Image (tube, rainbow, N blue to C red):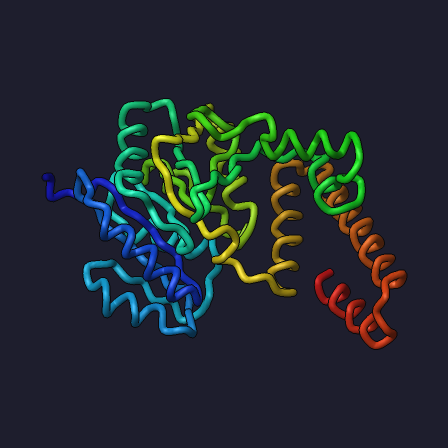
Length: 301
């Protein structure tokens, strides 16, 4: 086995102590076919995550942040601290099946035209997560955020973006691979500037896939590699998270649709706010509950 690191696995952790430890234990059980390293970036966790990782996994490269630098910046830190030829961004709410990392690496080694690869994601009952998506267009914010998504043609837009025509039963090239487990060549990642840190928590994976496609790089969904995934467990829902999602989506569309993106997202956000506000007014809550709900809506906006 070469002494040079071939694969670096970057795990970003923020207050997910038990999930992070389970993720690292699964990696330890997976005997690699090449030399690899694991880099854990702890984003200012308050649950003892960093100390627990240091105690149980002294071989891990541990980056301790004093504060939560969010997803894009934290992963970029990890990649810069890594030394492997290939880098795999691995969410802390995943557990790899044996051989998955090597299978993805071997695919990229044999397929230079592909810029990135992701595995099939599984629920812990063994069912398949339908995780691939197409790159969203201008219609997607409208159908995602408003009642228009419940009716034709909004349902058609939603089905197309979510790959409802693909059962995830075989390997194929896709427009956007699952960001929960994402492998590419480290030099290419760094040359592209990594994840756009302006898209701090959301849409940074969409943006990276789109930038790869604009370079005529192909992206592969690979069913021969499988990883268990606790969907949504690494991102806690809160007013701040909701506000970041809206802001990151806005910035993504401004970046890729500079002439119309900002105006269009403000319009969609206004329609969404009207819809939510109407639901609060017409709903069964009492007056004080409605005032609190409107306050939350104002803070999110």
